[in-house]
Image 1 (cartoon, one colour):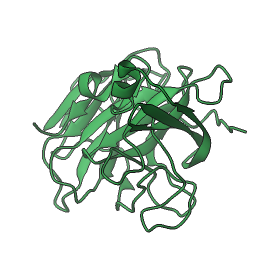
Image 2 (tube, one colour):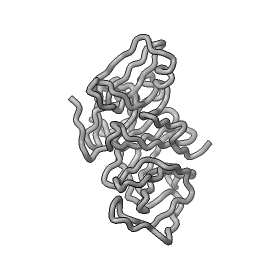
Image 3 (cartoon, one colour):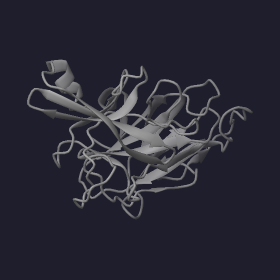
Image 4 (tube, helix red, strand yellow):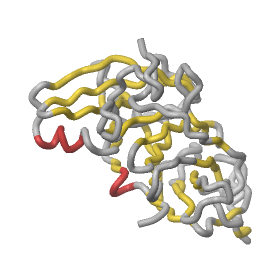
Length: 255
């Protein structure tokens, strides 16, 4: 049975096999690894944020900090704080001193919600903010090209979601053999989209729902389509949620 928390927010499609990166059985996404990812208090991107001379000061939404984003790639995104105004997803274009990359959401009220992602994989980091169910279950999906790390967005914070072993919950993108993509689909047939991991193998696609419970997640129901069409196979090798895709609607730290 799925458990949904009104304070929790999440999204995605990805295959989960119940194995952690050390080979032990676990209720975690495929290829879950310990990444050293940590959440940080709101405060802006990698470079010092520039004060906004005219912060909105709206009563609704997250508290106003008056920060403007500098040194980031950013794009319009969903309303994450419920004030009825679209917010901005962003990711720093330069790493911090310890090599991690800051990312987050700047709300229309002027608050900068931030977290850091650390990964040994080379290349850029990419961010997509999404609503798993379409009814306010918000998540941040952060990819390093090999895996997608899962974060919950709630109460003006971005929090890393953990598996039962206390590791960062991660979706494999074809590098460990556990999964090939992430998406938001109705896996269990209850009429509500699930965050799920996808695995494309030959002409089959297996999707496994992620059961979200605040900053915790575990594997749920799986479903396999034995004779998937070309479009289904393409989606199973992508990071999407509803109409949003990481490639078209996300932001990236570099080329």
